[in-house]
Length: 242
Image (cartoon, rainbow, N blue to C red; front, top):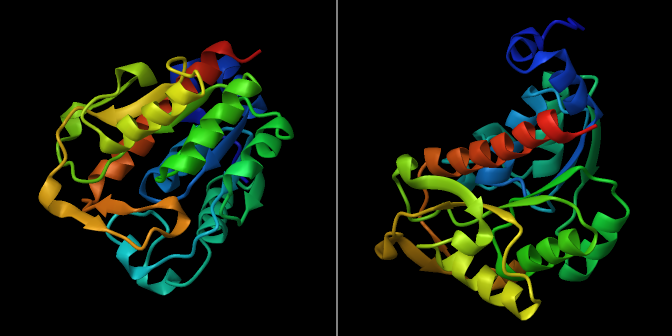
């Protein structure tokens, strides 16, 4: 393997910053439109260890926005397809794949046993999302949480702020409401858009996997959310991790 593949990154962040990233362990839960791109960006930064979690398989409706979704991968495991890609980017990556839809009661043990330096919440349903954030708070692990990218089309309105500042997002409003019941109202970084969602694109679902509805999505918006989340993690770890 060519050990100089991180040369351009090291020109920017230095060998010390690169070394910190190589020591880091990041957990990414959810490998959909946001999480698949977040995983790619984190892997290309030179993160040393990744745990990726998703129990879903690739569907043809994923092709418009999810990185591993191709006509040739329909029906295949998202974790397996993303995992293959990440190891092709960095064969020296220490990769843990969890092919599982995480029930809320699994979050505490996942975080407690993982020794993560940062957690990326890319889940698109309220209950598992809230329980993952709660587990991170309980075990004092930093977390960045992606809110809803659906129904939105203006990339200039995507921001990263404390979760208490989330606006114009139905998913974010529900997450904040449930977190408040747990006495969590701040201290979590959140990626969200201040753009109002296009309500005509809302579709109801059968409620499986804690998801009651979803908005229409365009190719670039979930990717931008993943990019912002990855930037949050990478910039923190290359500066702070010792």
